[in-house]
Length: 519
Image (cartoon, rainbow, N blue to C red; front, side):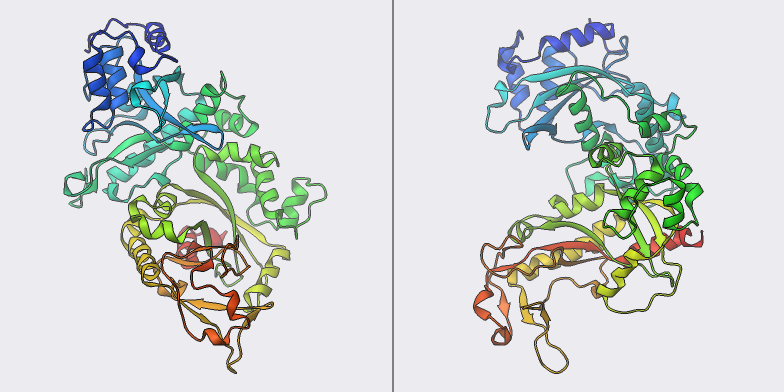
């Protein structure tokens, strides 16, 4: 047992609160010289945490499975916030401890060392500000945190998911997007030393740590740092708390099960949606939220799924079982992409952390294979709801094929992207309105690398300063530029802003494996 004078949760919390709003170098610490060495140590990534733990609470560093204050049954966590768009958000996920693939899952969740350690935490938040010396940073808020019922259910669901991966010898396939709020986050310096023996099988898995996701920590900050108490639970959260389900996926399925096999118009009637327009752009979103019992207010909807980093999306299949379209990801800046290693890229973060709640619809009647534009008339069809599934991009593809695809895009941009006017069969220029259509040598869907590159916007932008374009890192290499209708309007240094897209073939295959289209 760790010996400490803080033997009750109240004494731990009171001591934490004493440090609030005092610069670190002004705290009444006996050996400030030693304390500041701990704080500023370059070999110590957890400098602030160790500073508080060792020099404010007089705790010795260890890696025990027991809470830091065993008698008080309180775990201490010191975690940074940062300013973003005039508010405060979590700077990073909250690491809770290294996962031992062989020993951490020997007991049920309620009896596990993990849950025993984190069920009550003293969370001390400090603002990370690189423009201020570290010794002048300060704790801005400290709270004694326990998980409400809905959050505890999500964490248990996640623990069980990670447990399943481990016991099936698939720990190497875990990613942040596999779970709700508790993730198995990569933890290590990189290289061969980060690989660990699994419980089952010969294949090794990367070292990972239990962690509360960044967006979940931001929610806590919004509730307790920017405000003084937890927001009232929404209707959706209350339903989850009161349900018999511990699995988030099972709970959502229970809400939408009765609508499977029914048409959009039938579902709208059952839900008594007044003035529902199935041809509107937001029609499917309105329908899904209504099936879930979520308010139609956009911000309210975001609260329900944001903390689990889950994006609600409707996806549509043609009658023959082919998927309508690929999945768009956020746009990227060319100059930033070529400078950013894959593991540090927005693409890696998006694919590794983002999860999707797919609500699947299918056109019940035969659809002619005509132009993509005309196929969008599916928007007006009375589609059949086929079911729901949670989906994330497979981690084994992210770290292999997708990395290769990303690095190929880097090379193309570094060498100068090749641009050329597109031509019709008769040799005339293909036009989009009054603008030439331009071909490039970035990733194509036909390259079969699970992702491809194309614009989000319908508006071309190859001229300086156009808001739909951005600057290339290397001058573009044009062919047949003389065929452009107005060649002076096409710069060698600017190009229409692009996005990565997840190939529809991957999503189509995974949906079919889940047998959702058979409903």
